Amino acid sequence: MTSMSDWVLTYQGKVRDVYIPFGESIEDAAVVLMVASNRVSALDVVLSTEIPGKGHVLTEMSGWWMSQFPELPNHLTRGAVPAEVAGRAVVARLLNMLPVECVVRGYLVGSGWAEYQDNKTVCGITLPAGLQEGDKLPEPLFTPATKAAVGDHDMNIDFNEVVSIVGSDRAKSLRDTSIALYSSAAAIAESKGLILADTKFEFGIDRQSGELVWGDEALTPDSSRYWDLATYRAGGSGKMASFDKQPIRDWLRANWSGVGEPPVLPESVVTDTQKRYADLRERLMGTSV
Image 1 (cartoon, one colour):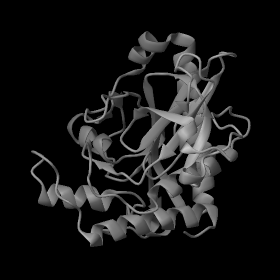
Image 2 (cartoon, rainbow, N blue to C red; image 1 turned 60 degrees about the horizontal axis):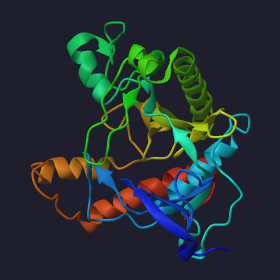
Image 3 (cartoon, one colour; image 1 turned 120 degrees about the vertical axis):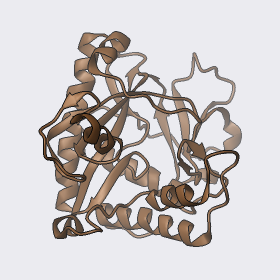
């Protein structure tokens, strides 16, 4: 068992902290330690309030989902995790990450619904008229985005822009792999009584083999939108009951102008969000917190 003194912080994201082995450079390191914190971001800001247990849920769910697709190379290794972060950290292959968020949408919701109301398109892709919010799309859509720095917005891009960034063959591989992965994961989620409405994947290139590798996080409530299947079929105002940080977004929009530091979340919102994360893990993995 290693300790945190064996690792050096090299990057801090919205939720995850990335460390390299002590004494190694980012150019020479073969692995990184990825630690999922209890931090939460919403409306493009990292809040001062944390969600207890969130880091454990994200780490366990990512590992579980990657284990469902052994045919797809992923970044996980068998490296020992320091005791200080056990349960919310993994040792992973250090990849050359591709600067593209591979978003796949299966349902008409969020920014896709807003765009559709104006133009009958989602990320520039024309859709049939007459669709309603929350409707299942005719087929899953690959709607990539650029990866933004902390505090910035991810920007939607079209497929041609992905080609210009990573090349034609790699862009096709990202699109086809993402759609296939989403479709398979959606089927697994449905078998658990859940709808996987949309998600995002990130991929990198192995530094030695050059193969495409699934990295970052996998189908967590931070990167994906899950709904309850029974509630969805029943319709009504709770049709799209979700298992994510929507209570935080809703509270912030009602209680914060978006200017300056966001306020501290009330305990009721923290508890509600914590329960949604835990409930999703139990529904998928059959384990409780």
